[in-house]
Amino acid sequence: MIFLDKPKGDAVMNMDMNLFMQDMIRQARSEMEASGYEQLKTPEEVDSAINREGTTLFMVNSVCGCAGGIARPAAMHAVHYDKRPDSLVTVFAGQDKDATAQARMHFGDDHLPSSPSFVLVKDGKVVGEVPRHEIEGHDPMSVVVNLQGMFEEYCKEV
Image (cartoon, rainbow, N blue to C red; front, side, top):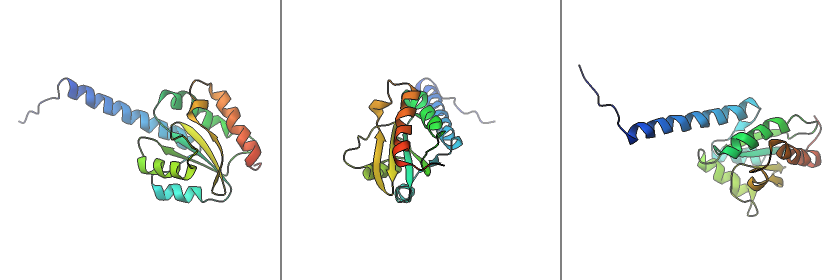
C-alpha cells in the first residue's frame, strides 16, 4: 500500500484558491457564451473578428467584481435592443493574454488597456468605447444605456 503525503498549510490554500479561480473563470466564460458572445482565444481569431464586415462588439472580460456584477450583466442585456451589432465577441484579460494584447493593439493608442471594457468596431475601425471608468462604480443599466447608444448610432436594426 502506498501512502501519499497530503498537502499542508499554504499548499492546501493555494490548491483551493486555484480551483476557486478556475471555477470563476469557467463561470465568466459560460455567461458570455450563453449570451451569444464568441470567445476569442488567439491573436488570429481577434484579427479575423476585427476584419469582419459590419459591426462587432468586443467585450474585454475579467474576473474582477465590476466585470461580474456590472459588465457581464450589461453585456447580456444590452443586446436585447432593436439595433445591435452583427457580431458579439469577447477576449479574457489575464487568461487569453495574447488574444487580449492583439485586440488592444487593434483598438489603438487612445484605448486605455483596462478591463472590463467594451469596444465597438465597424468595418475594421473603432467607432465607440465604454471604458472601465464608465463601468466600475456604475450600475449595469447605465452601462446598458451607453452600449445601446452606440448601437443606435452605428448598428442596423434586426
